[in-house]
Length: 105
Length: 114
Image 1 (spheres, one colour):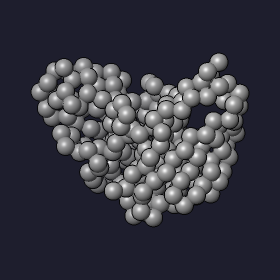
Image 2 (tube, rainbow over the protein chains, first blue to last red; image 1 turned 135 degrees about the horizontal axis):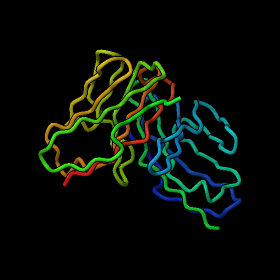
Image 3 (cartoon, one colour; image 1 turned 30 degrees about the vertical axis):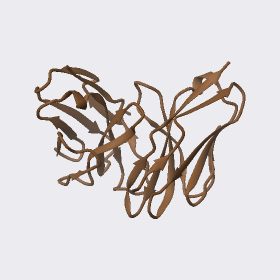
């Protein structure tokens, strides 16, 4: 079954680099998407691609079956849910169950 | 720049009542989607519309119907609401079907079924 896996929670301290890991079992997957979701708001795309990429404080690593989202200089305002999603030409885009990031002051 | 607009934002229904959730996008996107989000379950696809005039089932279609009214609008209908359909519903759109284009989401509709 095509699935995307990510940890349910990650905790960090302010100013640190946070890594949220994602791996998948999606057939022929070649694109990853990372979304940020604050409750009550629309999920928002942070970074995407089929190779390592960076958008501001957000870095995305890329391997054949996994990706990590790295958030640099994490702040209290970054506390949210982060979704990893995987696109495959053979199947639909599949979302992970989301990782809730908590920040210790 | 409204993007994807969902109405209503909140709704409470009684079991057995019917309801239509509305979604409109102003980005001239071809594809539109309905998801539900439940605690610990992430975003699960209910139905999608690859292009105007077409609709297809997603992962959890039972209990729902959809209508792609035109290119801009994609509605989700609950014919006989059940408590298991209590959830947050998100509409999304993208330029193409399952392409490498990202999906743009609305702010969600929080639906409670009593």
